[in-house]
Image (tube, rainbow, N blue to C red; front, side, top):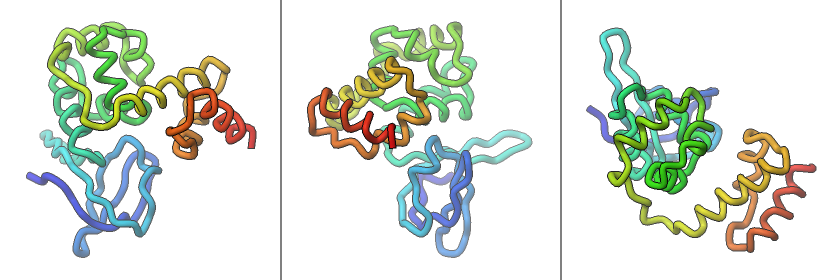
Amino acid sequence: MYSYFNGKIDNVNSDSIVIDVNGVGYLIYVPNPFSYEVNQTYKVYVYNHIREDAYSLYGFKSLDELELFMKLINVKGMGPKVASGIFATGSINGIVDAINKENLLYLTKFPKIGDKLARQIVLDLKGKVFATSNDIEEDNTADELISVLENLGYKTTEIKKVIPLIDNSKTLEEQVKDALKALLK
């Protein structure tokens, strides 16, 4: 079993990366492959998914993401592909908050998660998942910014491209202005 890989990114695909560790390339499915840069060194924490017909690796940038992923795949009806998809558009603290506050609307925004699976996630994990040690206030501001931009009619894919460009130390109003400028470019 593998715990993590520390190496250079050799290739970035639409749903995965290839990380070169001492001359061996490992294909790892990740939620946001384009957040990795080719020829940069990363430490990627992995989950080994072994089935009768497949052996797959799912990777994450932090242990907190991996731990939440492990809890999610133990939910009845949740596989690693669906659980990994949650991290593509949701933040750890946003996901945890939605589970603990029974926010089904937030959970059903993720791909392949319907009302039934969202209810199962809440049933299985409410009170068992907690916010990470990262700055929760900054994370909530990012979630609020995303929500404001979605309400203005922008698509999630467009929003995700500009979020890393926004200075999260500014007020929400200033962040919205900066995001709108970036979106109009």
